[in-house]
Image (cartoon, rainbow, N blue to C red; front, side):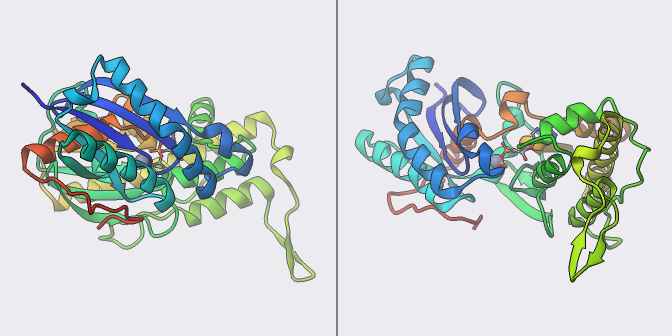
Length: 347
Ligand code: KG4
Ligand code: ZN
């Protein structure tokens, strides 16, 4: 019988636990979001996040077991996202996983959160095909990988400034859409004219597979607020986001979306010309983006490549992807021990 794993995720502002059978069959997937606690700061406050994880982790794990109709004794292992992320938040999940693994005497699996995003398209679906180009696009990450298999990921490109989700969130604040604004901006962009404003599509050097969003952000800032006028050593903007008409706001959202997504799609095209692969695998919050999904499907169809996108419920942070990749590691004998600690970065 396929092993039954509990997955635990607490790397940022989602406290999550899931029960997964084998590496793909999700029996329960519980996510407690902390959105309400961070919204007034328009960003995640690490100290608030780790305290909230502490309060929620126990009930969230209990709920995941209950919904799966399982008990702790039924588990064959416990997988935890131990890197990368906010260190105080990660520690809550790692400590819970270690305590539980010790108490039921089952293996502990240390799972990299970003690699787990690249396993998420396999959940409740068919196995992934390798080798592949992997892309993780979220609030904290914009990285491209060459994947030999589910556990072997080599970074081939990364952002040199903001992550794409972060750029979406900042753009949304500039447009007066609130936080986190990625989904709202995506929605609004569908009604706008994407050719209204010519925003830069960042490509960097000719062979670069890296991403950059600072130029696009600045161009949007000027498009919203006008060219700054230097006055007394300070930059003063002639306009503000409240001065935008609804039509202009829609057009700016559409123009931003075109520039941000086109740069990602062209970088994937570049990567495909360097690395011959079977498929393209996408993960992370921004993989929910409607234009990214559409444009990548067109690119992969034209090249006869498979495109694997997560179901919408597995795009954002969740523990099912942690348990799923944990099962792959368990099958390969790659277990951790109780000396496991959390790390802010991928090692
Ligand atoms: O993966 P995730 O839940 O958390 C991180 O690990 O960061 O991703 C959240 C990010 C946020 O920045 C959010 O604005 C962005 O994903 N996002 C989107 C869309 N849905 C979520 N960005 C663009 N278009 C979307 N449809
Ligand atoms: Zn994530």
